[in-house]
Length: 70
Image (tube, rainbow, N blue to C red; front, side):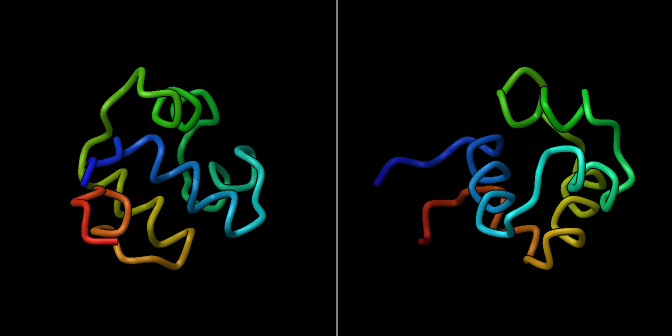
């Protein structure tokens, strides 16, 4: 099974939550540019950023890391 990149996981979770990038960035307390770069795999977030995004999406951080256990 192919492992999805974190950006893909974040984008899918955000879309499932029916949030815009701006809404998620605001809820997570991160910059819109930062979120955009993460979703487009132009930046690899630190784990604390992953935790902020996961909390804003109400998911477990492991769901965003993409270990292929879906």
